[in-house]
Amino acid sequence: MTGSHPVASPLTEVICVDCSVCPHRALLLEAKCVQGDVCIVAQSGRQIDRFLRRNPQFAQDYLADGFWERRAIAARYAPLDVVKQLPRDADEVVRRVVASRLPVDELDDYLHDSDREVRMTVAERIAPERLSALISDEDYLVRLQVAKRMPHGQLGRMVGDEDREVRKEVARRLPPFALGRLMKDDDAEVRRIVASRLMVNELAKMFNDDDWVVRLEAVQRAPLESVADLVDDAEPDVRAAVRRRLNEFLHEDEQ
Image 1 (cartoon, one colour):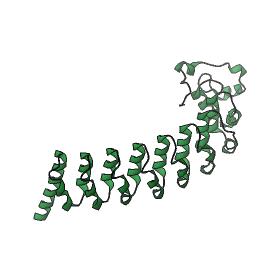
Image 2 (cartoon, rainbow, N blue to C red):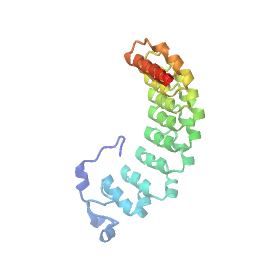
Image 3 (cartoon, one colour):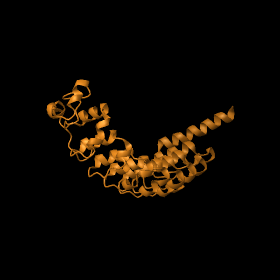
Image 4 (cartoon, helix red, strand yellow):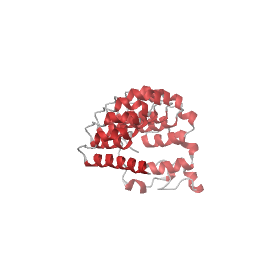
């Protein structure tokens, strides 16, 4: 489990509970629970998960349990029709599990959840055409997930995102003919991606970029008749790339 919850000590895993008072003690004889290893009442996520994996029929009995981790694990194994009826849980881990199981058309209540990982889960699952509801999310990781799945026709709305990681993903996914708005991006890494994907007849527009890697990407793909403009570039690697392309052309012409 992640988030604000404490991580259990390894010692937690070996603490045994009193099976004589457990409502499921009859399962001991069937090896469907094992003291200290497969146990629903232990304060151990691993033991709880092992128990419900073997005995999923009991999961719905623990959906309102007082221990957040027991509720979260129970939500994984309980029947979906029961999970769908659950009230909104106070714990973010439980809500993440619920958001991961609900049908994609029933996620509206979790679109603006206070926990970013809940919203990321929604962004991973919701129908792509509905991702616009998260396009202005306050957390860049949520917006990054949106950028990974947003339909191409709407992706242009994210070229001005404030976070470079989001814009880099946009640059990777936009069709080459639509990359013009990112040629002057403030971040060199975004422009490098653009130069590696831009339509070749547009690449000469990037020959004056301040970043030499951008120029190198551009010169390696630009039409041959334009690359001579960078034969005297300040960067040795760019000059070398220009010479290499010109020499290759000459050798091809000789053949």
